[in-house]
Image (cartoon, rainbow, N blue to C red):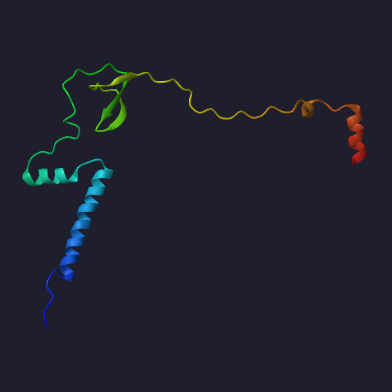
Length: 126
């Protein structure tokens, strides 16, 4: 009888567990918006990890305080108070926030004193 060659069950289990660990690390780094793979490589090589967004920063003077700009950073549109290359100045809208609903005004007929005929009808129905 000829023996079948190929991967064994244990080898396949180890490969699948490794693949699942890599996929889980990728999902965690995507959720936390960090690159765990680059950080791990930097630890192994002994080099300091690059700060996130360091490639996009420029040596521009700081923008005046209180000015918002609409910028696109890493494909995301954000509002920032930091000067960016193609940022457009956005003027914020002053809002009052959420106002509580006002209670309805009482019916004027209920608050007025009863007339003599209304009192007599009330007394007769009791």
